[in-house]
Image (cartoon, rainbow, N blue to C red; front, side, top):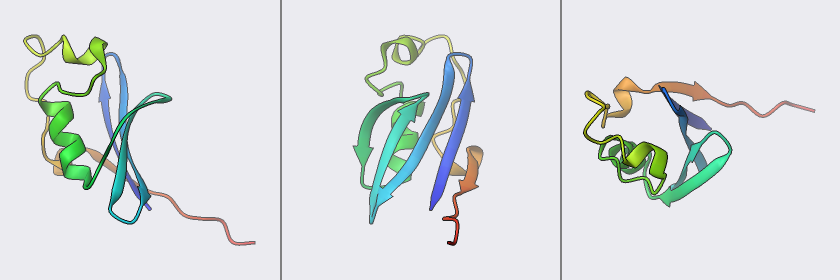
Length: 82
């Protein structure tokens, strides 16, 4: 599974694949929402529309928040073989 990370001053956003065509947006250990695609989750972070007040209120203070996953770090999780 592929996860995406975006580091900010208030924490690290993570988009985690939660199943077939299901993705979750997290900051630290708090889940903020579920999405049909990782791109939609990244767009909400860039639009300061995450329902995480500490982030959303920074809309006028933060510049250049990437809406594209190309600017997020990509991590591939592997399942250990028994």
